[in-house]
Image (cartoon, rainbow, N blue to C red; front, side, top):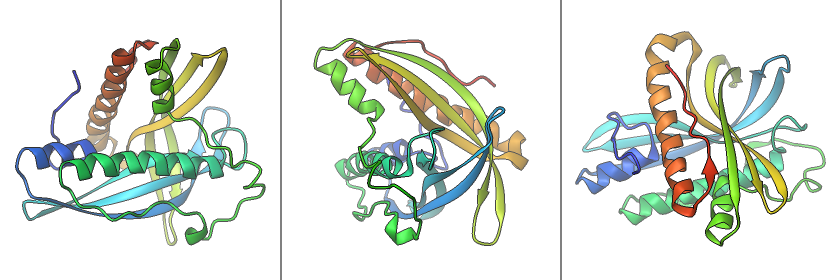
Length: 235
């Protein structure tokens, strides 16, 4: 079963949906950023851009804030190209819009736009083919094709660059290697994060949130008959 645990303060879109269903008055205002981030990934440090949404939320007149990373893009081959990442981010964003609107949470119809954020990349038109999301593979399985997924997880250290400061952040990243239709696909997803300098406080909750997101995915896999290894983050 999907985990219906509600975090309070809310930490996920799922929390907002369940709070609304339980009778709370939930209002949400969203703001978008594309941040340059230096990732210290094993022996291959690299710069990427994360597509980040900040949720400013009121629940029964109490105010909260949480952030969600929707995609990560690079101008090289260590992760999806930035032009693919913006499309992936918006596809996940509209899934969240649908979830919130279904229960009556009003949200404005905004999306990530590279042009508005003044980020320029070379060969952006050449790399404009949209990347498959994990839900595309779920739909492939739903249509009757065999799909298998190998899951691994990793803590990735990074430094986020804001206009006037830097921020050390640890990302809980899921890696999915997917076999279907005679092809192998590779997919990455940020499942949680915490301020590196506040590890003692932030890491346990980030693990809970990330593992619940994984549990939701595994539930979706099982519904359509995808074979997978149930891997979770450990404390």
